[in-house]
Image (cartoon, rainbow, N blue to C red; front, side, top):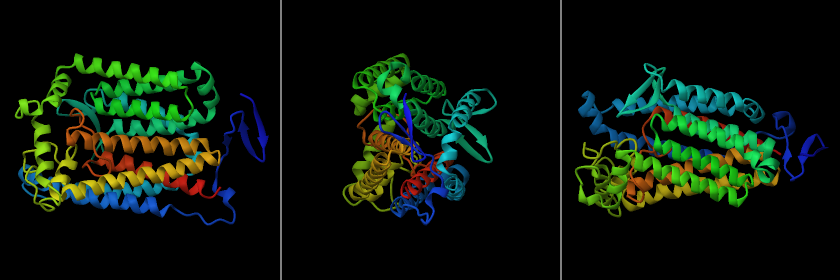
Length: 395
């Protein structure tokens, strides 16, 4: 790839300026944060706190004898997440970009460690967690952020080859294949789906030809169908999805209870804290099915407000992706785009499962579902995101 020096930056044949952005380049400018995004994330965290408090109180009371167990841990996770996010925000984008290969290596090692007996922690037959400092870390969540950080760096360096040669896409496919395979062994079918979606989406934005994109989508579709038909419990979930009321107390139990919760909410809801399905009727009410509880207690208006907040997040991230792209900041644009795919797909899929629009599969609702991993990894991503928007806004 031919390159030429222009005013201290490097411009390649396809017009992408690869600039090493540091605070020293912002002489005379006062660094600032995107307060729209910061405020939106604040709304998410407050609503998530209320959602966990309401959805987990009954379960906590009947599990440990008092209703504050889960919400206390959630508050602890939230404080730790804010501190972690602030630390991440202080790291320049150039540093994040330079360490991206090491981040990927650490992610792969963690995915291998979680599969080893005695290290990985199993819940409901799935080994997805590593216990660290009192927190169960779900490694597949870290893998999503690690893929975004690494793939953004690779695309910045190899965008021309991705657009012009099949060889340019072999490395991303290998990375996606390794991460996806390790996540699938846990097993975490939902994490596998999100990782592949993030990777393919970022390659599409990088300019990968349509014929290659469609081929990849076809291969992934066939692979996922094969995995479903080869695994009895996944096949049972798929058949239950098409006729959930045929066996409402069997394979369709979670889905039917979720639908009853949403239907019971009506337009205005039954009131925060007054939901019925969280009282040990709906399994995983404070994690994978927290949206159903919110719909029951806040109704159509409340559940629609949550959807609107995620749409605002996507719109604001889209604005920054456009701004970074116009300024030729490839790495920054790809990172923002990857996070936009990650959060929007996860939110859409999680809510769709609760609504019975797609087969049941556990995917946490970002910023809302209970879990230390959900908060910590998202907080790190928020720190990276706000740092990127700060630097992009000063160019």
